[in-house]
Length: 525
Picture 1 (cartoon, rainbow, N blue to C red):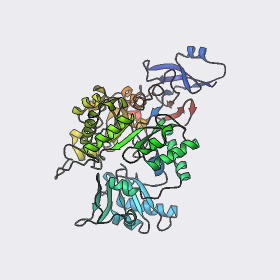
Picture 2: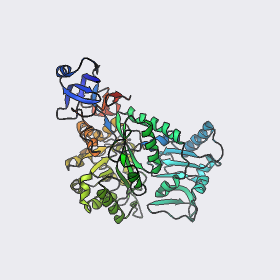
Picture 3: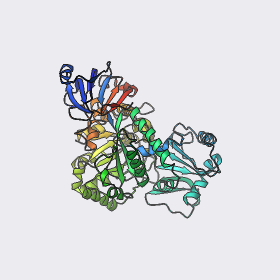
Picture 4: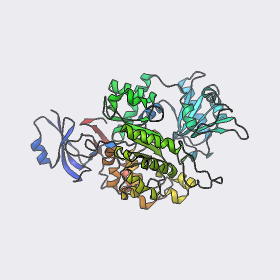
C-alpha cells in the first residue's frame, strides 16, 4: 500500500468545503480530505509526506476540447506562429528546407500562420510559396486549422485544377478573372486536400505523440481530448495505448460523418479506458472560424457589402440525422459551432431528438451564442465549451469582423452560468498551447491583445473560472464521480501551482506557474 500526505499550503478542493489543510492519498485514490491531525491518524507507518511549502494544491486540469493527435503532427512541422509577413514565411520555409536537407519532391508542411497578424493582412497564395520551394510540394495551415495554402506542386498532387468544383461546405480560392486555383483552400476543400500529405512513420508519430502529451503536463492537465478522430488518428491512438505511451487519460471523439465504424470495430474502448484511452462519443463540424470569416452567422460580417454571413457545413436534415444517430447509439455528441446560425442549427436538431439530453451534448466553441439561445440550450441539457482565450488572441480581429457589440459578447460564460448551462473552457490545441492559466485569466478579465476590455458583463470570478477546467469539465466527460475535485474516493489527479489563484491578483493569473502535475499520485511533471 502506497500512501502520500499533502499539507503545508492552500489546498483548493473545488468541493463544498473549498479549502482543506491536508489530503491523504492511498494507491492513487484520495482517501481523506480535511485537517492534518486527522489525516495523520489515518495514515500508515510507510507514508510519504509532501510539504507544499506554501504552494497551492488543486485538482488537476481537464482538457475539454483539443486535438492531441494534431498537436503531435505539428511537432515535426515548419512552425509559422511567429511569422509577421510574407517575406518572413518565405525565409522560414527556405531555412526549414536547408536545415532538414530535404530532397526535391519531399513535402514542406507548415503550421500556424495567421493572415490577421501578417503585415499584408491577407493569405499568401501559390505564387508566393512557389518562390520559396518551387521543387517541393508545400502546404501551410492557418492557425485555426480551418484553411491553408498549397503551392503549385502541392495542388497538382492533390488533383486540384481549374475544373475542380468547390466541395459542399468548402471553397477553393481562384485567380482573378478565372477558375484557376490560387492555392488558398478553406474548410472541407482544405481538409480533403491536406489528407493527401504523406504521414510520418508510425514510430515517428508515436514518439511525437509522447512529446505532445508532455505539453499538456506542462500546463497541469491529466485528462486530454482528441477532438476529431478518424481512421488515421485512431490507429495512432490505439498503437500508443497498446504500447503504454499514455500516462494521462485520453478521450477520443470519433468523426461521425466519416469514421463511425471505429466504434463497432473497437467496442472495448467505448466509454471505458483501455491503456488509458477511451472513446467518449462522436464529433461533427457545423461551420468554420470567426477570425477566418467562415463561421456561419445570422447577420452579415462587418462591412460585408454582399451580405456575406459565412456558410454551413451540412444541411439541417443531415445535422438532425447525426443527432438522431448519436441518441440511438447512446453516445455523447460534440458539435463545432462558432457562429450563431450554426448554434441555431445544433439546438434545433437536439430539440427534434429530445432523448439526446441524457447524453450531455456539447457545443464546442459556442463563440457567438446569442442570449436568446441560452434557455433553449439549457432545456436540451446542452453544455457550452468556450474557447475563452479567443478574447485575448483574436478579440481585436473579432471587433473588425463583427463590430464591437457582437465581439464583446463572445464566449458568454457568465450568461451561460446564469441560465443553468454547464460550461467548460479549452484551447483547441494545436491552435494555441493548452495553457489553462492563460485561459482562466482570459475568462476572468476579458482583455484583448490591444488592451480593450471586451464585455465586462460576461466576466466571471476565479472560482467559477476554475470550475470550467475542473468540476464542470469532469461532468462533461461523465467522470464527475472520479475527477474534478479533491474529495474522498476520487482519483488523486492533482496540480501544484506557485500561487493560490483564489487570492492572487486576477490580472496575474496568467503568470501563475505549474510546478507539478500529478496523475493518480504519480508525478508527471
